[in-house]
Image (cartoon, rainbow, N blue to C red; front, top):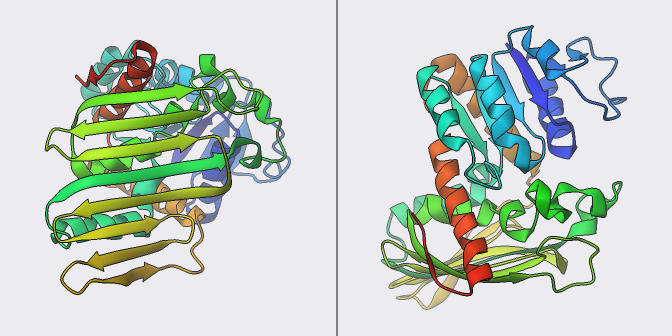
Amino acid sequence: MKVVIIGFGSIGQRHCKNLLEKSNAEIFLSTKHNIKNFKNNKRIHNLSSLEECLKNQPDIGLICNTSNLHVETAIKLAKNNCHLLIEKPLSNSLKNITPLLSLIEKNKLITLMGFNLRFHPCLIKVKQLLAKNKIGRVIYVDAENGSYLPDWHPEEDYRKNYSSRNALGGGAVLTCLHEIDYLYWLFGDVKEVSAITGKFSDLEIDSEDLSSISLRFKNNIIAEVHLDFFQRPAQRSCKIVGTNGTLFCDFNRNIVSLYELKKKRWKEIMNLKNYNLNDMYVAEMKQLLNCVRTQKKSINEIDQGLKTLKIGLAILKSAKSRKIVNVT
């Protein structure tokens, strides 16, 4: 199988490493990034342009460049019958998404959005517990994702990272859209949003570094979501309150706990003490390769990525207008 990777920053390199270790894929790049860790591998070909890569008729395209270029890149690949993994978010606007969807349908392409948390065992366990009605009817959710942006890639100047730059699709809302995606995965469509976003820290960035979000789902579940770029130590968690109990997922410690209302006690359901976070990305890549081989739909196709993007854009619109915004 042939794979072309567009964008060779940290996530592109992670996917490349996982493909080399977990598959026999032949990999095509067109990057000016330093590839010293890969250049001696005979399965990697760094060519002069994307067009040169496409001449090799790759089966799959991994879109790992900046968010503002995702759709433009996806259209080029879809025209060449490449199945697609598109890193989150789908884009930073709705421009040209309709023609992309038409191409994908016409060429019967497999798509997978790069929301790796859907492959985290703790989140999968939470979804299973909700399906078993372990806490009754869900009423309220509190999700948080806060960490210090310069710590994400200490070897890089954070000010040059796409997350720091609004024009490239950065900012806390779209960069940390994982939380919005998994809440949509767990609870369905969002009806309306209200949000406050802005630049509050001393970080040298031109995008928002904090977002405080309220979501009302169509099933009347209410979720409060906090996202930030400055929190130390990092905190990532989700509390789900139901009529018969509460679920708590700590993504930093990889623990899922259940409060049983009748017994009035917390019970640890999962504790992955030595969990390797890269395992999420490996599972994600395995699913993509398997879906392409079998022509089966993925867990998170582009239509779901579009729904998540629309929620993200509604959050930004709400913050700008200081009004509740309906998600269409």
